[in-house]
Image (cartoon, rainbow, N blue to C red; front, side):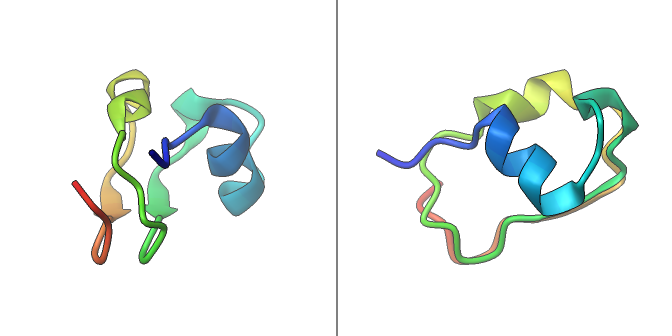
Length: 53
């Protein structure tokens, strides 16, 4: 099972913390668990196409 992790998000966005992220592209990541998004309150644009959610 592929899970969205804080390390993955930081690597994709180069952000210092989850609360500063406004855009996240996880297209085609074969993700099944995206529960981390609950901690990302400031996300405005989110791409999750081609995942297993």
